[in-house]
Length: 450
Image (cartoon, rainbow, N blue to C red; front, side):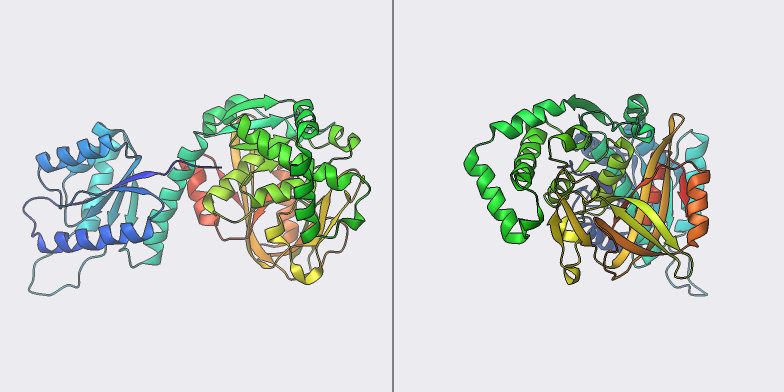
């Protein structure tokens, strides 16, 4: 899942009558900050503070040529409305107004920046012109201000990446799973995602056509990591064939992520894909299970916001009010990077119907963010929860984790039902709640924080 980088413009501004010493200093500080903090983004930063219309127009031409996606305007000192208005009108891209704190006051000295006042004025002027902007108050040294800027940029990066993605559907939805239906037009409108489909028969044909040496090599690789003796005859081979075939088909069909109808057909072929999907996640290949497109989109969003951390599509199966915990479980699709080695992860048969491969494992402890996008009558909403995954062994077959939630668990469960949120949630072992909130806001998706 490769995403095109976000192109970010960063400018430092002032109106001409204000002294230049502080703006020049801020230009050096904030461009250095950007090079260090925004290394994963393409930066376009003029070499001088912008003051005159000619300087601003030159910078705009440069940023347009570089296809800048969003502009950060740092107040070197007080700036009139003209620069912000020129950027939004001539470039048509989002604008982040960033006002650092004032320098220490001296009773008999002049005001050196007046950045907050300028930002307030500029934001109001843009509103009158019919444009929206983002306002950030506080210097780069303030974690709150820095986090807001970073989360805004992450949100725009996710929006850009998702708008270039193609989702591959492998089959439709499992029998009687109405919550796995989807609205393709709403998905395209909200996220920009293109959808295409590949029949499950094509996957089965790919499995059968694989070179025997490739299949045997993967079987040996799997056997070296997990004891396959708990699998019925033929299931390890089916596991390796499906793993290789899905990886190959995703690339051949140009899919950035996928959704699969994992039963009943795959079960009938003794190749339910739980463990395969977990392994693929650690390869950066996202394929959501049970035909749940909205859960799959949530999983991709979390992967973009927390690179290198595999999410976990899961059910919430129980709660404990005394400990304020919830148990999250699924058939065995947890990525190996999530397994808690203390409790001896196993590669076994499907824990319920016995027709494939699955990881029976407890998952690692740590802070988690739990989310779910849901299309409710044509409009998306995002449910968002936070907690701490505990160091607990599994209590039943499959993959599971027990999470101590921040909010009271009974209230969470009741609210999920009231809001008609489906039963699949996506957990990532990272605190990305603020970034998810900001990303949702950029897509006009309301957030239900629990």
